[in-house]
Amino acid sequence: MTKILTDINWQELKAESEQKGILFIQSKGVETIRQGKILDVCNTYHCWTKLRNGLSIWIHEEEFIDDLVWMRDSFDDYRFGLSFFLSGKVRIERHGLTDKTDESVGRYYSECNCDIKETEYWKAGEKFSRIYLEIEPQEFFSSFGDEDLEQIPISLRQALMGDKLQPYYQQGEITQEMWVVLSHILQCPYQGYLKQMYLESKAVELITLHCQQ
Image (tube, rainbow, N blue to C red; front, side):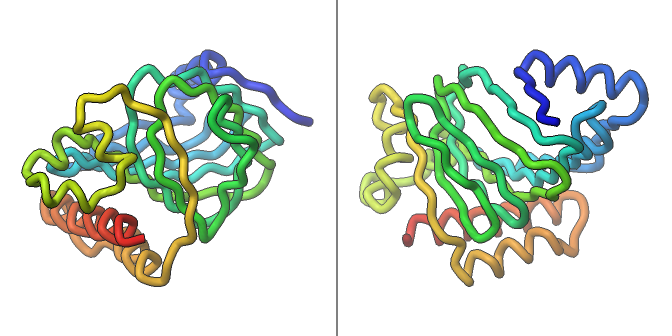
């Protein structure tokens, strides 16, 4: 059986799951963790760490109980990010921007996700995991000079030039160098602010490897 959910349905199920005590949210040092079950939908684990200099890092894991079609409303903020797929697969259509694209292990994408509606197609019983870097360009690149900014992709640079932001999506292959950094993130040996600094250094390394491509 295939379930169909909207963003409103999803938020209602999350709230009900928290009330029933099957979905837990806790702050742990520099991390915020949400884990447990979304009622009748999936097992879930999200770990969010706010880094310095306009960076955040997310570790996502989902495993759906039934096949799911999730209709996402347009995002009203400007979110820049890099998403690295570690296991599983999801098919996503970004209406007006891309046809249906498979996001699967070994791939990554860069995006500016604004004013775009999405439809996501999930398969039951397949564990999906990824690492997502969220970038706030105005803050992250605030110390860069004009020459430095010439070396970053135009898709990121547009956020610094005062022009109207254009949504974009570009997919690529995770390189061997990227896999090494991703494994370091998952196996971080530190806690607290040492962990925050360590993860920040690894996030910057991934951004550098992306810009090299």
